[in-house]
Image (tube, rainbow, N blue to C red; front, side, top):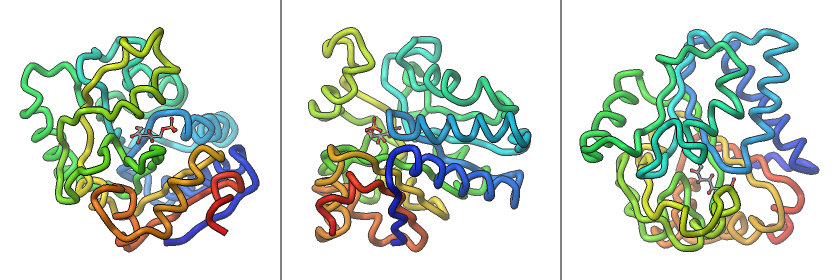
Length: 242
Ligand code: F6R
């Protein structure tokens, strides 16, 4: 695992943006795996800024998001579809038909999971996947105890995750209890992984990721076994790891 230590959130976002921009310049047809939540917002801001300044071309690239809440339609203000439009897609020239976010409202979620996995494979797999980490070690929405061989699946969200994400909803009751997420093996099949970690709140999880045994009770520990993973972490997040 390569670790890039940066001073703060802004530097983390800039370092991640540099990698993504270079990847897209080198290969305009890049298949990019994207994450939501608080952590990558700064990265998207940097990418938009770069787009405005340098017109980096997203017209040929394809994106796949990690996850979506079950029961929220794309136009729901708290869906990850809305999130992605608001923080990134609306501001760059990515083509609508090249955007993939699992649907949390497909009447057949099983079919949705199968199709999502198939579409990723049809595109030749994910070249570079952005990840955040939950305080409990989840990646995507794969909570502790998730089998490492899982593909895109429907999962029950841990109470801790619902509480953490309730900051975006009116109340905790409004946070869905289930999500559809790329599985651990879907994530591990990406050719390159970029994990972003910022803030003291994540310091314990990062320490565990770096030092614990590889075990399903701490999903992010599997990243230790990936051939090409870069962790970009700020000083607060690395506090316990030195
Ligand atoms: C988001 C995702 C999650 C988040 C994680 C951290 O698509 O899959 O794994 O990356 O919950 O969330 P934040 O960044 O809000 O702390």
